[in-house]
Length: 442
Image 1: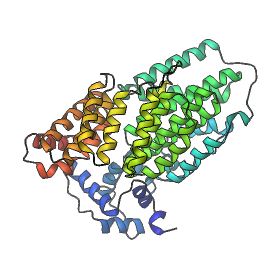
Image 2 (image 1 turned 180 degrees about the vertical axis):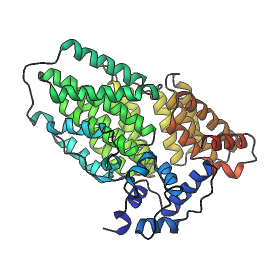
Image 3 (image 1 turned 60 degrees about the vertical axis):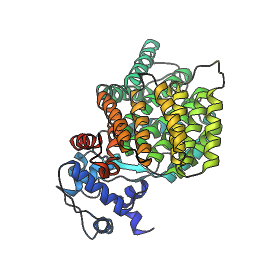
Image 4 (image 1 turned 90 degrees about the horizontal axis):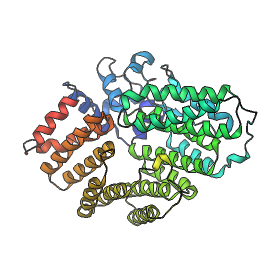
């Protein structure tokens, strides 16, 4: 294996599609946000990755941690380079790994494995395994029940309430979600229950783990987000009803979305190829086709992208007498229009892209503040590409307003990442105020 890929810093950088110069640029940008100066260049990153030098513990390492979205506590606790995201392999699917995957995700101590990320290749293998393995072939524990029916009802209702509140009240619900998943994990591992009760417990565990994964993803804690999605997939697979088959496909599409965010569109597209054919509810199919379109647009595969968008629209317009699964019940024409607009922007069709994004943003309900913030940032980026910095600044400021209100760090980061593109227009009306605001955020 190439030396470049043996070092955790090189692995973390390559997983995100960054060159050494790009990583150095982001480190300098992080320093600037803190009111500091950094002389980091690609040549210095090369020395770190080959072991010829180590970044300064008090100055450079905190900046690197910020760039990768890692809690600084890990830096002092684990030391260089062991706090960096590394490589790990997911547990193979099977009923005996449902609980271990949850326990692994719930680890709260600063352990080395807590900062290891799954490689895109290993996730593609996991997706293939999910697609070809029938859960019904696994032995199931069906001893007569010890789980109290009233308690199980309460666990489910409380879990649904927490998941519903998780987006708008992230800080208030973070510990509650972890504690609730810990309780459900204990019930699964230590109680006796019927097959029906077991299905309900594993389904609840999968939904809670999925919600926690999204919170960690929003906080740029990508390694731990991957672990919770991994645990969610195991438990959705173990529950093994038709509804949970859709849930498993949705979790795979979440992992694909994360890979797309980390600049690995090819791996994202590969995972969705496994998930889409086995998705049953039309709303779920629509969402997965839309995410597939996003990946294909990044890959500049125009024809396939447009076919995926058409499939997403057709699925969304398909009548179903069954309610959409909770994890995709929000999927709407607003999402189709806005994400479709982003696809067209990536493909260079920016006039049509603006029309669709305007339409989608207008259709979003007030309860979808985080999504609206994301879509506004997409549009601001497109306005910048069009050479309209004043409109871009106004749009980005609206996104920041929403992100601040709901405490959405990923949305703030998205706008902050546009700072270098705004800088040449520092004297344009509105841009100077936005840049000052971004510096204060940093």
